Image 1 (cartoon, rainbow, N blue to C red):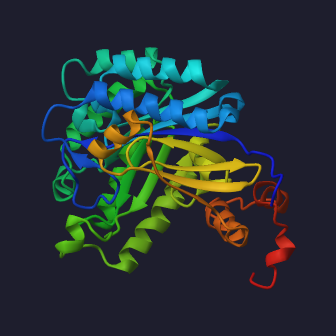
Image 2: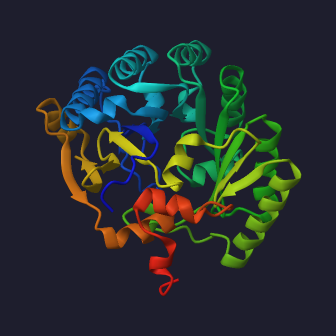
Length: 354
């Protein structure tokens, strides 16, 4: 296990605030009840990055292939501070010449008259991929999901976004409360017609510690209907020329999400921000890190140089299953040589368990 060559490295930046918390969401997101603390949070992210580089100077020499700004709703942050943050990252880290930089956005935050101006400014900052949380184009379904946009606003947001970001992902969900088979397919047809280059398509799940877990919808489609929806959606994706390259990810050729591919191929990633996770390879082994989850605590701790809440080595015996849990999400599977390169473990070592 010692002496594993460091794999490709990605950077994840977490922005933990949303306008409101959706009842199905189990991510580390927090409803915004007062002014967004932009300056303090961006300062905390920069301090977090500086501390990470002080702990491991080799990070600055490794090439970053992708940056993903997720949440929460990162697009709540105005373009200027995000531009400044990316400039700081460029000064501290080595970015690939064709680095993929993704920003997550909520259609409900692109309704104002300044939406085009904002999107142009994000593009000018170097962001070259947008991920829109559409979920559905059906207004009734969106109300049931607790979203802050309606179907027409979803359509308008996609139209605006694609003018600035030819690499555009749409998040879609199916198996929604009250949704019919034809309704799920109608959502997909609108997404396909939009010109989006990547679609992430998920069945709604009821996760612990969410509002839906406490009070689940009574009219969720049953498992058989959801399976029929999934089969039909996958067939339609194929007909439309999208590659089904991961369990819930579909892309036009050349537009697979490089950032997520790095996760699934057991690459390294440095996660900065409230509740962010990292997986990093060092000469002594592979380590996982977590940052403080609550935004206020994270800001205080990061500015004091203590953004890490935990750092733990991954036991060598657990590496094969961790690798398999990621790599087997990919439809193409994996080459045994990749497992050896990422974990130091030959596939034959776990043949009895397989």
